[in-house]
Image 1: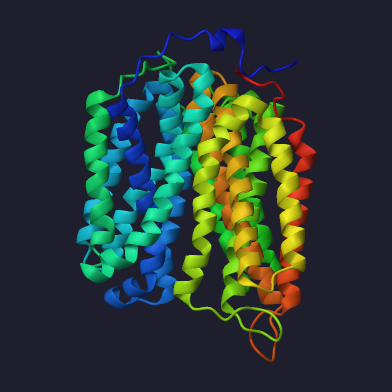
Image 2: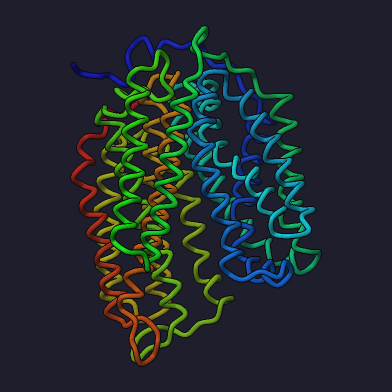
Length: 472
């Protein structure tokens, strides 16, 4: 049996409501503020350690809490958005995020801050909910472009968070790195509530597959935590095998429940369709490659080895990494347009080939600042282009009732790929440590770039399964 993701019936949807500029602007500001809130912790982590009196490992829990909560919330939010309407679920989600912002900004200690960050981790679910609103309120030909713009604004928010964290924390206090974005989120949510049209709910008269929800969440959390533990090293092979068995067991139980559910959380036939699983594999590869580069390039800026490395300080490294962040935003802005004009398969193919070429080039040429800056910026642009293209193509390829769950799964897969890629890159550098200097040898960086290039090249094996046609 052949499964068609976007059947003619699925395409026959009511004419979208005409969105006014204030509603569109509010959704964009909300995306920008959420992206800001997601990254303000990283630059302020040393200051948080001092102010809260905790060590680096304890401070790392702040970012990990967001990651784990996001992995749980994203698919649930996407599914509930498909069922009850994107606007309705988005408002509930923003109430949780706002409450988390208040708790975080008033936190007197780490446990209270972690509680606030647990609530704020719900922000990850806002991305698939935004895609639901975009698909229901934009004509088909404009949906891909709108998805790209929303993705770009989330990325741009990350840049803003990195830039404002220091001035807010040092000029006012660390509490304001959570309070300031939360104020913007509350204001933007109020405008969305007032001006965004209500989108109709779907799947009326069916029960929620709570068993599927619980098992999928447990599987994703076990997978993420397992990746962090295994790639961190220092655990015996028997423990690794135990983690694999736990993840596999949870995954098998989830599949069994979904196959018997009257209204499953995830339609398994959708996951086995070539267009869906190929987009998932490519998203995983792109996220892993990006995380590897995000590890290797700053480290090369920092180290000063024998004939390699540049010995730069933190301020200079942040400055030289900024072009890559800007390139990622630009890629999100044009990614949806590229899909509409050329199709997801063409964009992903060209992007994978370009990424592999960039990585091979930087493996050979990494002696000067401009070489690393250009390579990182080009890779960020191409990676952002592919990621946005995959999200835009998936958002319009599946049936309208599955937009939220399909795109939320890609968001979670991107998180998993980022964790796996970052941890793998760290392992490569640790394995190549020079015993004399205590820093990674140059050969470790070369190996890392070539491994990332191989991952990009292998992704071409699944590109052919993406939908070829161009939607105009």
